[in-house]
Length: 256
Image 1 (cartoon, helix red, strand yellow):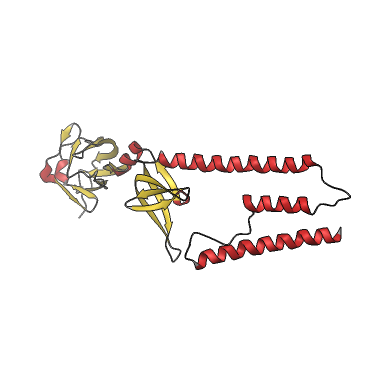
Image 2 (tube, one colour):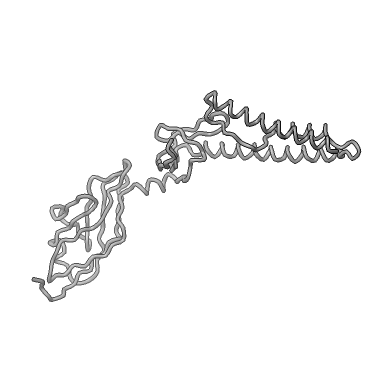
């Protein structure tokens, strides 16, 4: 019994040593993808099973059904692993044309966010790689996949929710934050309307994300709240009519 146990222990140690030595030799040969691991794979499991059969206690041998059960369990696990790999690769092919976000760590360990469209998928040693902006990335680096329509919307011109007050007793220009879009979906200009009338373009100036509207554009308005409409000339003719509110009032107090 002691000899059998010793033989099995020695075999496990030899197997682990051989596995580590093989990994180290692969690294010496320049195979950077290989990493030292103590995990048992298919080959190691089968070798271990053979060793177990060879070193079982002859006075109390294991039933054949025990070995068959172990093989069946391992076979089932292997099939599930293969299925997961197949599903992962299949999902990778479905990402072609999708906009994605990749978190890629450089040689210094610094993580950089890359955003772009998946041009194609290629297989390398059974693993799927996504080509984004001319560079290949692994599926493990993928953090977000966006629907094409959603991705486009995120690049289109936009206006956030804002409320401004215009005091007729103290008229002043109003600066409104807007985005003309990016990533090829930019607008060159924007038309602005209030109370159903377009504001003269000479009363509007844009610089660094801010649209400044001259006080003259509001001087004929009565007291009340008004929505402003923004109409961009991008490829999708984006319009925003429910985000910016101008509250016109008359305080009756003229500031010095």
